[in-house]
Length: 228
Image 1 (cartoon, rainbow, N blue to C red):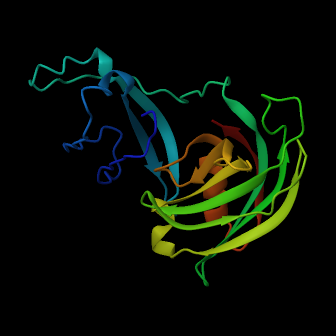
Image 2: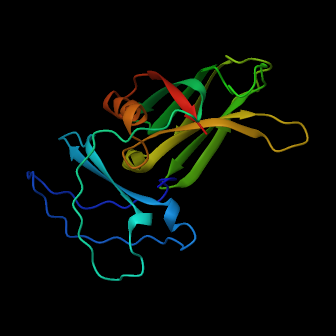
């Protein structure tokens, strides 16, 4: 963390409340950034439908670690139910629908409305939404809505389809980015949210993805909070 772009996963341990994983993982972290990084370990229960349920999270801040000591350090950490997000960087909300056709291997993402976009200004703004399909941290396809003019609560009402194999559902996510177009400048990011599998999301975003997978060909709609 904080970007949560690099993840590694252990093998499954079946039918035990005291699993022994005995695995090691390597992360490349520069000396310059190590004080700003932390490790997050998330433990999942996997049911018969291969749906992942979060048991808890454990955090370890790297600035507390003696990086000059190469000896192996063993630490126990209590699992937390929820790792809370700060609310100071909230950038509004967007209504998103997800639907997955497992026979056609097709993901449909609907972008319907925005709410309270960009609270930093009292003026209504132009906006559009980018939708990125990502698999294993690689952007597969990017699509975007039309620009809605001068609306703090814009209505987009657009849907996009993506080809997504069944085998990629556990390594995929959809990143929703609200954008403000800027004439003569690079477009401004208002806020974003990542809805995806257990490798990329948690809380409401993970639940939305799991509900989509559990209810093939049904449209699942939720409001999601944008963050900077």
